[in-house]
Each structure stands twice: as structure tokens, then as C-alpha cells.
Image (cartoon, rainbow, N blue to C red; front, side, top):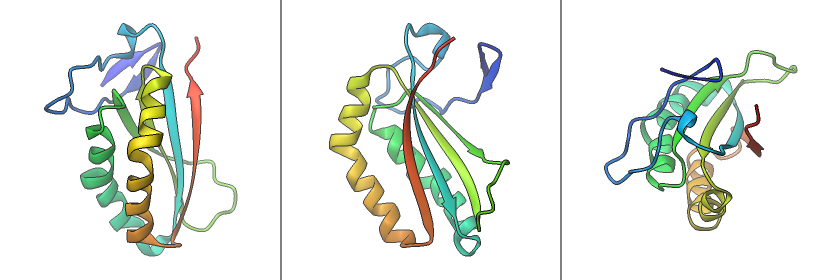
Length: 130
């Protein structure tokens, strides 16, 4: 685990072709692409395993992000299922534009094909400030 501004951040391992910075303390700017997902209980365990073993590694392999983490949302508004926040860190807005245009649609489609209507997701772009 690394600490950045007092926050512990577990960083993904470096991919074979990845040569970019992983520690946010070394970056002048940092942005966050947050995907919040509510999954139905029926698919919950399979979804977690698939996210960790397949989806997140595929997203990281695009080279658009420098780190990621997956968190369980504890403050629920009476939703069915379980909600997670998957956070992907990136350096430049060009990175997220490239991801959105070149990789995002196919990766979102693979999730949709696998889980259909058994999950709901929304995405947010954030800039990390002091």
C-alpha cells in the first residue's frame, strides 16, 4: 500500500507494456474516473471475481490509467444488492478521452453481455485537489 496525502491507496501491479508512473505523489496533476456499480445479490460473487480477474485487468491493459482500486459502498440508500466504487486514476484528460473513445464502449458492452439487467452503473470524472 502507498500513502498519498494521508490516504492509503493500493496500486495495481505494472502491466508488461506499462512504463508510466504509479505513485500519485510523483504526479503534478491527477484525475479519477469513478464507476459506481450496484449489483444484484444473484450475481454478486461472480461479478466480484470477474471484475478482479478479468474486467479491471482489461481496463488497466488499455494503458489509459496508472492505478486502480475497488471499494464497497457502506452508506447505502435502500437499494437492493450491493454497491461498489471502482476507481481508476489517470494523469491527463487525453487519457480518459482516449479510453472513452477507443476502449470504453467495448468493455462496457462485455459487462452488459455478461450481466444484462442485473446491475446498474454510472460514471463520474473527478479531479483530485488538495
